[in-house]
Image (cartoon, rainbow, N blue to C red; front, side, top):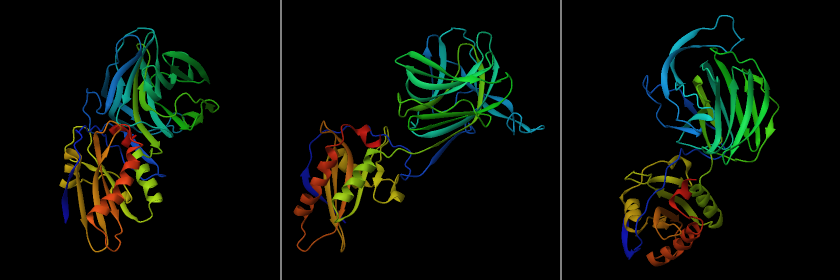
Length: 359
């Protein structure tokens, strides 16, 4: 049973930690954008519509369209099924207008994104593409197909300035579904169109990671579907803190960090020596440690536990740390706290804000 220590930390509470998708380091993860939980004629959840350049943001909605089961040229009689696809429907002809629909829930470093696109209409332009490693509307990469110019090109924007193109002439007929794949590994970027290399691999170090989004230009009406991202999950700082502490303090039996997501009431495990515990909810003790700055101590026959606040550089409580240690003869509450405190203090030295823990 845990007992509340009388010692209290008097710092005020500011919690802004955001829980990310938690995956064991070294493994690959996947995200599918199939829109099956979204509604016809509505914008998909988890995305933000914006615009790069000038003009108005795009009109992004889900529409019904027939999608063939095979890539162009791979089957003479592909089966077509009607289903929901993402569409950019605005016909604003502003020249330097680049509608973006950005997936807001995650950022990606090394990844492969595959999507199908169909360029449907447009008087001034007929383009469709994927923007990636997006920092903001003025800083990102993109690769787009052009049905009017029959080409596939890579560009980048840095502080709003456009660089490019790099690519080649390729047949991209309007009204036909195409499949594009973009692979980023470090500073190397590769692209395929319908299973064939679109241009030689290129290297650029402007952006190491960022968000992914759908891209069009001017009055292009374009459709997208079957989008998948295979990526290497980024190890968050909280997990790095746990790993480093376990290496340094050999007598530790366990170490966990609890934090509450934005607008969430209950803390969850965001880092642990046991990967299977990631995402599990905390108890009342962890909540009180975060909300009130309390310290809890407990022990059993083989272990003792101290749960303490973790502060950022401003002294605000942003998480709770549970330290599980092997006891020694004569172990007391006081010296257990003295053993746990340096571990937590070393973590705090690397945490500027709550957001740092999950980035």
